[in-house]
Length: 466
Image (cartoon, rainbow, N blue to C red; front, side, top):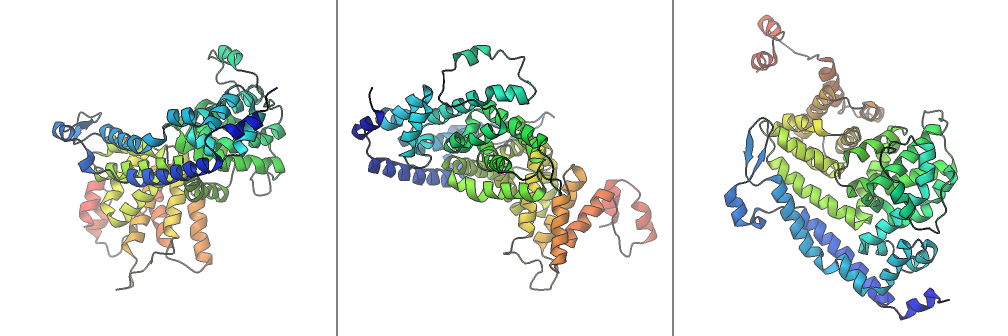
């Protein structure tokens, strides 16, 4: 038999060349992310600008200007130019080691491929080739298939998957038969990371399996799942694979709802920790997620410039789609603009109707993060009054909780903890929440005529209280 490990010594490129290419790819990813953050009008072809494409609305109205789809296509084309030097076909045709890894994985020889991958930089194989990451994902999908059918209701039973299952090659990966086996699957999952989302069907099955695990788990004293080695491993999978994988899905609202079904088993503190790691850890660690973050930020800026009461339906849909990929980026920019321009509050609140339950929970996390920022002053230095950013944020919170069914526990616990620390400024947020949800508005020094007018419609109330 041929010893593959001895053959690799004669393959190109050598170790130093691979490391240099890996560093170059990381630098290029950072450049792509930075460039995608800004969409310049000068990048739009002249003939496109002259044609004045529009975004159509259901009401028959239209938004004159370059359409969102055109802007997104131009952004993708610019990104493709930057990434052309490191395209997958070129890499696989010139990198013999990576080509061998890809062939071994696709043939099911994971144990041999793993030895070769371990000799490469972290995530080198899956970053350089989507084909490699998809092949690893297919091995995972094959391993969990029977266990998924046993533990989860077969929601895909009407699909003809028998042909696909029979066509799968034999694999050196053992099939999962228990929760402990599923936890041990991390030995493969860590190699692919959030790129498992490139195979949405396999990602969905994994999420449902973990959900079934927590459904069977006994509850602790605080209502959260009981602690165990397997439970901790499942949490690591959620943290490292499932949650950041949403950024690499293709506007997948179904996956978002599946993840929310899973995260509902955790207390808000644990969920917020996952969101924070997604924002500050996994987005930087995985270049693909960082590039997506840059694209989402650029498109969010473009959409928000065109958001108004008249355009809220069509632009709100676009914001909703962007939130399905990287909601933290969208919300951070939205909140920063709302704190500066309070006339955006109403259009922003209206546009949030396209969000999923998971995204509303992430929105609460982002709002709390803004309120707790140590770089902001709650009082103006000039006259000691509450800062406009705090008033705008409190108004936004009140309007959101009035219009949408959003969990209050995180926000209320934040205000309570601030009071314990002898900080009462955030009571303004609590006041707005109570007033809006209870439809009770405190009015000081109102005349009898004004009090009578407050029993009228919204327009009359606005006019009389000016």
